[in-house]
Length: 500
Image 1 (cartoon, rainbow, N blue to C red):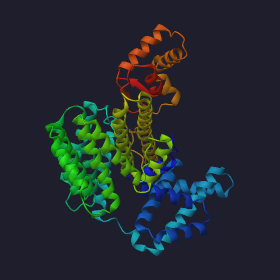
Image 2: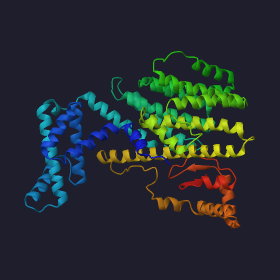
Image 3: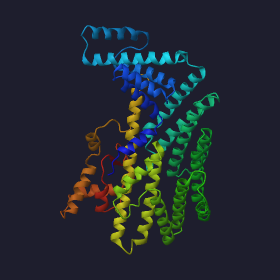
Image 4: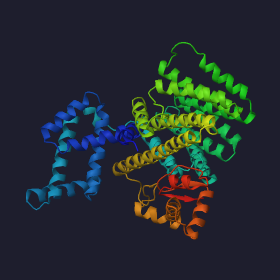
């Protein structure tokens, strides 16, 4: 599999709290420096950073250090801090106490230097800033409620319960936005989060056949993205709704007309040649889909080949003739050069989807003429499916790590705890949770491939497994419909899955 360090870094850079966590982490590194070096580092950072942000970061880090040392916060903190310094002066302190005392000393000197340079920071927080902070905190608490079901609306895994959770969150977020003042600077953030929740819910509704609800949600998401000042996301929702309407109506000519209109565009356009080239890829894949729906395999293959060339020109290597893992590494490098956060995951997911479709068109053209080549193409498709699963898993790991860091600085209220999507289980516990099913499958497949007669119990088990649909669980394995047959069974068995 490809190296994931670059992908993880790219995802982390684009997460909502990435900049804040970076500032807090950087400030904590200064506390381990000599005082003169820490002051110099702060002065250098202030050249490109608003002093108010640094001042707030200092307050957060101070409270975090006190909380982790078991000190009370507020007025009682002074007595505990004085006791700490007394222990250090009397040589009764542990190494950890000495380190903590040094960190406090450096932090307070940074505080003093910053306030001396910017005395206005000690003024009370304005009413507008207070309202913005309160709205952000309230919105964040609302949208955190979707964390337990965040991975349960991807392809093949949608459930009515997950959609109900999202819809409840959307209702509460709309009520929050309706009660806020129109000049609250946090409103764009609320509308942006609502748009994303509505778009995700719409995709889940499509899986359950609730097409009318999906169209309404796409329209609502487009409106909220417009209020948030994100026209590209609003256009994406409009395009998704248009595609769904065309599929429901069966108007293949309309879909082809739209795609052909994109292909005949002239010039680089407002967004530059790269954006136009990507639009060309999308149009070609739409035409390939239309041709395939019309049972014209030859024309579908032609459009697919053109799309493959266009993707290669954009830096996304065709995995057909080489090593799929090396191609995947190139895809990650190319996407990381232009995207971060969920946009990075979205671009790579599209690349995987497009090449999956391209390989499918190629497979359809050779499946009868060249079975060996068809099998090879199918194995490349399986590799792309695994890559998609791994990207989802790595994204969840990065987001979980970000949540843990955020909770360290901003702990949840008493009586609540951070939700871990993997349930906090160890790998051994996850494997044990699968019971005898996957282990029995593995034993049956090994016996079959080695020519030995497999145990009848495991044969029964494996037949049952290969006839079920599978859904993600602890490790977030992508939905795959297992087909009967030892080859597919052997290649698809993975940890962390259980049958529906």
